[in-house]
Image 1 (tube, rainbow, N blue to C red):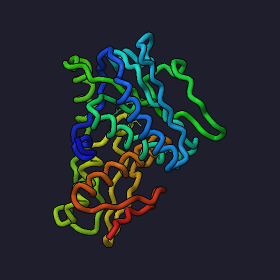
Image 2: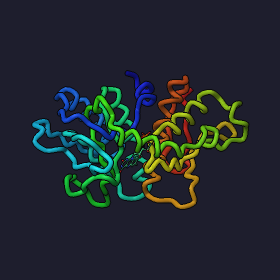
Image 3: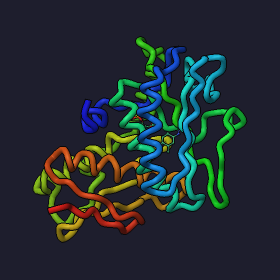
Length: 251
Ligand SMILES: Cc1cc2nc3c(=O)[nH]c(=O)nc-3n(C[C@H](O)[C@H](O)[C@H](O)COP(=O)(O)O)c2cc1C
């Protein structure tokens, strides 16, 4: 599965089989984590309990079913902008897991904090955990209901874009990027990130009046989603970080 196919296939999985991951899959996940850590000075960590004696993280039973024996702990710089890096590279990890046929979910709140013991350096914090396992073959009704209730609040794709031209006339790769932002995960599905396209430049904006640290993770996630979709639509590029950071297309 390509990264873009993984982006299209991804959903938050809240029901897992009680089955540990194969060691070669765990190695692939570790390799992406090492890549993220060395690219951005992050301290992502992978907990793998392949003896399946106890779960890698205790997820809140009100939201999740089953157990996972592998979990990434996303530790990074403790300030808002650090959250953007965690979001961007965390989404890279999530899409890698999906492309390996695994189920996963961003979890910042609904887990037992005492069930994990991350290494945390000075000025850093644990932003979120990412359980990784096999999605249950049949998603229980409760998990399906949670997702459809949450995603029912979605806005139309056009509403994710602030531009100096009407939406239909924007370049196809910008529209593809905006669709990927809409399809992406965000904390409590707040979808706080808009794509801004003015004078041919792409940036992103946190448009909600009340901001919180979690939204910086959403900003990084949106940037990664946009980049993967733009690439799939023929425009490769990279992002400058920060709220006014531009997308720089290679050409
Ligand atoms: C930063 C972040 C934190 C999240 N924390 C939780 C969480 O604590 N519990 C949970 O069930 N889902 C959590 N989610 C998942 C979102 O609820 C989910 O991404 C959103 O509702 C969209 O649904 P989808 O991912 O299935 O497309 C989180 C997502 C993000 C991006």
